[in-house]
Amino acid sequence: RGYGDHPRPVVTETVDALLTRGVSFRHAVATPLCSPTRATLLTGAYGFRYGIGGPIAPRKGWGLPAAARSLPRELSRATGEAYRSAVIGKWHLASPNHGGFDHARAMGFDHHIGAMGNLHGKALPSTEPMTYTHWTRVVDGEPMVESRYATTATVDDAIEVLPMLGE
Image (cartoon, rainbow, N blue to C red; front, side):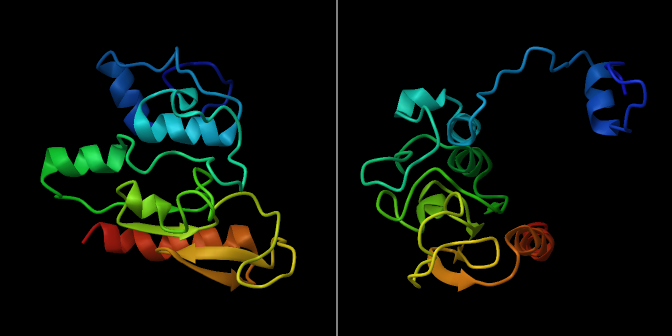
């Protein structure tokens, strides 16, 4: 509400509290593409610094290097592993050919549940094309064919994982 940019603003208590303390987000920068933005959020560096200028293609050699500095690793180092982390949903920073199915955990997350990228190609380990109801769901590095609608599965996964992160 504090920005006053919308005639019917939603309640944003945390953002409003930050604004009260002098912190605003008027000059944020993002790329208009998913993989470079994900890489930037995860590493703190522009995606192009790691060769990610567009969506990750499922080809060998394309992807965020697992050894890159990452937010979950930095938080773990700074806090002495006093927290748990998970990424739920589309990863799209590596492919099975580059980085592998467990790339999110190699980047420092404790858990990853979701798709590796966009829902195109073959639903591994099957040979049928991916759709929103036939797609490759990865759970901590293990691929499986999922038949639940992708968006519903992602929401269900997040609801299931959130309580485990707070324990």
